[in-house]
Structure formats: C-alpha cells, structure tokens
Image (tube, rainbow, N blue to C red; front, side, top):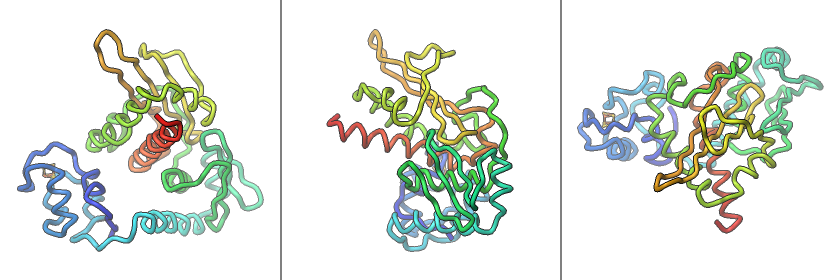
Amino acid sequence: MAYINNPMEVYKLLNGSNCGECHEKTCLAFAVAVFKGKKTIHACPYLDKEVVDRYGEAIEKPNTIDENKAEAIELLKQKISSIDLSEAAKRLGARFSNNHLTLKIFGKNFSVDTRGNLSSEVHINAYIAVPVLNHILNGSGKTPKGNWITFRELNGGPSRYAHFQQCCEKPLKQVADTYTDLFKDMLEIFDGKEIASHIDSDVSIVLHPLPLFPIMVCYWKPEDGLESDLYIYFDSASDDNLDIESIYTLSEGLALMFKKIALRHGV
Ligand code: SF4
C-alpha cells in the first residue's frame, strides 16, 4: 500500500472535474475525505486500476514526506541492483564503465552503480532521482522524434492535465512574469538552448532533463491587456522513455527549483 502524506497527494490523482459522483461536492473534498479515512479511493469511478491497486482500501498513516521520498528512492535502487545495468546502458545509449551507468541530466553527469548508489554533478533530490531511476529501469531508448506535444497529449496526460497546469505551468509562468532572469538561468545553469519558435512564442527554450527526454518551455509576454502565458511541450516519444508520473514529478521539480532561485534573488 502506498503512503500518503496529505490530501493534495490524493487530489493529484483525480481528474479535477468536480462531477460529484463520489457524493462529495468537489474533488478536493473527496481527497480530504480519503486522507482522513472517511472514504476509500474506490469511490471515484474515474481512476485507473493501477492507481486504485496502489492506494488500496485505506490510507496508512503517513511517514514524514522526506521518509516517503527516501523510501521510494530506496525501492527503485533495489530494483536497479537486480537488473543488468550494462544492458540498460545499451538500451538507453548511456555510458557504462567500472560498474557505473552514466548519463547527462540537464547536461551534467549523473551516475548510478550496480548497487543503485547515485552520484552526480547536480544536486540530487527526489524530483530528479525518481524520474531518472524510472527511466533507467523502463525507458525504451527511443530517439526523440522532434514533434512537440502538450502534456495532455501524452499517455495518461488527460486525467492529470489540470494538476499539471496548476502545479507546473502556472507556478513557472508566475516566476517568468516577475523574475526576468529566468530564461537566462535556464540557458546557463541547465545547459538550455534558445530556439526559433514554431508557435510564435516570445521565448522558446529547449532543456534536456534526460538525453532522450527534451522539453521545450515557451513563454508569451503580456501584451495589449492580454495576460502572459507559459506552456511546457514534450517530444512525442517522451512517454516511451518516461512514465507520466515521472514526467509530472520532473516538471513539478523544475517549477519548484526556479521558484526557489527567484526567491533567492529576492523576487
Ligand atoms: S467522482 Fe472523482 S472526479 Fe468526480 S468529484 Fe469525485 S473525486 Fe472528483
């Protein structure tokens, strides 16, 4: 059974339609009821079987958030130690030497050894470690196709899109609106590349969270009374290389990271 720390973790799994079929007025009210043990997650008919199986009959009392994250990473490390890492490196086009698989995360080296131990030139947190380990375990190694699509068009994207907007695109847009060096930081710190936009955005930056998993961040400045806008696009082969939860986690981590950077600069 999965551990849940707060109602928002349940809410993230729901489709956000507030349809009321669970006999709660909103998805958020349902999430709170599930977290408090007053309802089981089965009462929402729109969840994938995999989610229902994972979150089970009742919510176990939570560990702390950090314990949970550490636990998820520990489980993934165990899985890594049971696979042939050199084969995984071949599948993903990564480097393998001295029992270490090494690939580039945002352009910086990230290594995992055959026991699942991690080392990196970037700060390792759960928002990076969980997606990278999932990619090593399950990524197909398919080369990006060069077609950009929205989160909603990815496998499993439609049901999570409202949360993706709320927790990833919207916070990043708020940072872009107030922190003018955001895109300069993306280029410098994360080895991003500015490209000519095919969709008429004012700024388009391509980042490589993983070599086979590029993302494009597009920003439209406010103009003539119109609000600014920001969208994150993914390559159409993305969901072959990373599961939807990991894509969400990585994007959420990116938004949090830039929010912190902006705060550090007093914005
Ligand atoms: S049934 Fe599911 S989608 Fe509908 S309000 Fe309840 S939790 Fe939200």
